Image: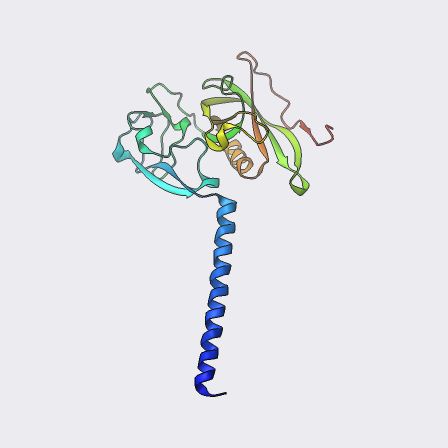
Length: 227
C-alpha cells in the first residue's frame, strides 16, 4: 500500500470514528435530557434577603435548571415576584418558592430548626390551603415500574403556601388534581421530602380537620395486596 493510499485510509477511518463518537455523545445527551427534563427558568435571590423584604428587580435573578431539579411551584419570571415580601429569610442563590413569599409582611416566620419544603403532590386545591394542616402519604416505586408500598410518612404538617400545579396540566396520570405546596417541617423531614419528590412514585396530601391534632399513625403502610 502506498503512503498516499495509507493516508487516505487513515483519514477515512478517523472520519468514521469521529462520526461514531459524535453519534454516541448525541445519544447520551438525549438520554440525559429525557431523564432530567428540559432546562426551565427558575427565579433565585441575587443576594441574601431578610424576612419581610419587599422584592425589587435588583433582588432577583433567573437560573436555568433541569426540570427534575426545579423547585416545586417555583417562579419562572421575576415579574411575578416584584412587589411581594419575603416570608422567610432567603440566602443568595436560593430559589424563590411560594412558601418563601407573601403579599403582606405578616406571613408566619420559621422557628429555629424549621425549614420550608416545597413539593408537588396529589391533593385538592380547595382543601389544601395556606394555614391548614395535612398528612403526607408516599407511594414508592415497585418492581418493574409498578407501584410499591404506600405509607403515611408525615402527620399534622402545616401548609404555608399552596397553588394548583402547572406541570402536566395540573393532574396526575389518573386525572387527580396536583398542587404545589410549601410545608413547614423539620430539617430531617425536609430532607426526606426532597428525596421522596425525586424518587417516589407519588406524594399525596391529605387535609386534616382544623381541630384534629392526633398523631401516632406515621409509618402505617399498605402494599399492592392491600396488606
